[in-house]
Amino acid sequence: MSLLKKLAGQTALYGLSSMIGRAINFLLVPVYTALLLPAEYGIVTELYAYAAFFNILYLLGMETTYFRFANKEGADEPHIFNHVNTQVLFGSFIISAIIFLATPAIAAHLSSGNAQKTAADFSAYIYYVVLILFTDAALSIAFARLRMKNKAFWFASVKLMNIGVTVLLNVILLWGIPLLLVSDSVSQSTKEFILNWYDPDDLVSYIFLSNLIANLLQLPFLLKAFTGFKFVWDKYLYKPMLVYALPLMVMGMAGMINEMLDRLILRELLPDDFYPGSSKLHALGVYGACYKLSMFMTLAIQAFRYAAEPFFFSRASDKNSPQLFADIMKWFVLVCLLILIVVSLNLEWIKHFLNERYWEGLGIVPVLLLANLFLGVYYNLAIWFKLTDKTYWGIYISLFGATVTIAGNIVLIPVLGYMGAAYVTLFCYASMAICSYVLGNKYYPIPYQTVKIVIWIISAAALICLLRYVQVAESMINLLINNLIILIWLGVIFLIEKRTNRSKAS
Image (cartoon, rainbow, N blue to C red):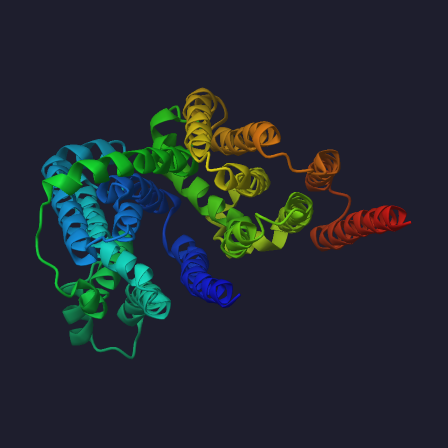
């Protein structure tokens, strides 16, 4: 029991830093959308999508590989740490050098058709992103070492400091300094001094710069984790580590395709003038900003995963665990459906979280919320291959999802624009959940209340379609009616559940 409590405590600390990071990133969206044009936010969206993919290449699955090899019986942890760190640093340096050399060509391609930003601007953004990726990778194994040595508090503290610095710098560089430049209380000489190093017409740069500075400021707090580090290349470790890490990298890349590919290729697949009067980067910026509103569901699912995964494993040997897992799934889906309905039917006031320039893309929000609900269902269903040691099925299902994502985006984006990308995300996660459900019934049957859950999902989707597209009164009255109907829907479900449980008891 004490070990489980310790695990739960560490999970809470690791989860806290991750959750707060996501939440803060979400809360920065109003700042970005208020200050940046959609085309400018499209640049941020696109380059961070590229960064997400390259982050996997930079790390090569070495974090998990370090855990695996350092925990083997008789392992020389300092030697393994040195080798893994050397491998990550060397690989990151090579990849960074290649991107640096290719930056002029990449920037020329990305800036084509952009009236606001030049190739030189894009080159600067790419250099920032590469340096962010390099610093992330350079510190990743040190963070892994903190986790392995159970330094959860120190790990979370450094991560939270990084988040705090990022937010502070964003506020200062994007908001504070521009206010100083237009303030009558600031002298002209001070303004001229600021303008020597600050460009108020290029706020995009300062988003990346904030991230980079925050990354660099982590280093002094991680020096202890680097104790004893020296560059080591062990030819006997290299091959087995690579064999272990490559499947992890493939799985990570497949997962990233499912999560980020739409923002990476939307601009490439969108026909010219698909949105009259708007550039492709404008469309990408709108999509990226509205996508953030699905974060309500993402945060709930992430919180559940941190709490549920250790719980599932601790209960695996219990003979009643299948029924318990089924009950957890039922209530998980109900909570997620409540988030789906509440957010979707209250978009009339939630939309003010974004600048009105971005409201044209709000139609994707209910679709992406439902998509993320299915992703949460998949995470729940995935317990079968984790408990039966058939984790290779996770790779197969992720690759299947990636195939759906690639093919779906190629077909639907040219026809439906960013709505097509949203629908593909829904198809991808729903198909992954269905695959996992079918396979789970074969290898680890769990008595999920499938019919009931499907009815709940259909009823929720029908309510959203009906109430979002059938307006019976002015805006405020519509919101009141919508929320009253949500309460009635929820009340009916609880009433049916209560009667069902009573009949079972009798």
